[in-house]
Image (cartoon, rainbow, N blue to C red; front, side, top):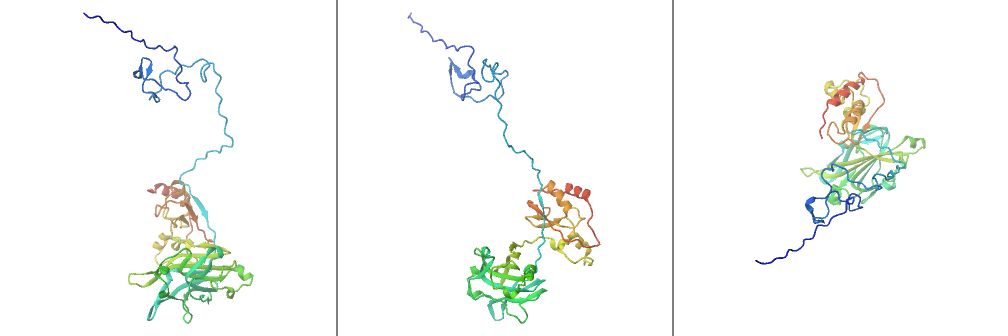
Length: 382
């Protein structure tokens, strides 16, 4: 038979005992070794992640190794200086704002604003509206004009001559134009349709300004005759400015659309925001104490808070501007939710509107317990 010679096999390399601490190797820390990855002392597969479960016994520690037996205690991190205290924020807490009363002496009723075509001249539109005024005032109407807020709300008309200033005495529901007075005419044939139906920056198709002398101006002996058309507003002037565009209805007739209204008081300009429901609340009615309502049940229901149905409404939700709650319910509501009870919109803040107390047959009552129960039962969904 043949002769064969066996070849010597290399013995596996033996590692020194005890093995090195694989947990103390700087950045290359092995958290575990898979026996299947070891063949003759050589590793396969390289890096292995941390085990799914911690080892049953702690890894061996060399004497004197950092953190091991016989080693000095590790230094503790220095405490942070001027660290702000953590204050958890309660959800649903909203801010309640107190209102400041501003007396507006002139007011254009925007729902009375209309455009009436001249007889036999459909391209010429007469501007008509009503004004409530507690002081003598003047009216100035601008067509396709620009307002410059940086120059005291100065108004400049882009086309045509300067408008006429028309004087009025104080009265409620003052009609413009006067029965025998001049009219404000818009000739739509002189403008492009885009100039009348839209706005471009601070340029508006129709601007109506009402001006009167404030109490400060009276003490300084100022007169309405000093006012010029579109001049920068003075500190002694109180005014209201209405901005509107034009549009066509289904029959092709021109009609106005009010964009916004601003008032000028004591040298500051404010934009008016409508509050929904204030006309039915006690805050929106002055001098109606003791009057008999046409339908007392419906009238009382429109005045009452929608949550407790006991107190009168005096708090407005912002930004949706729904006046629907009393002060007690608003306090409870902002502790438990951040949704408006009417439209379910997110509440940013609440505005409490108060007026001077008058003697009335029905007074608000303390319903703290009833309010808490009503708010707890009210379920508001996102």
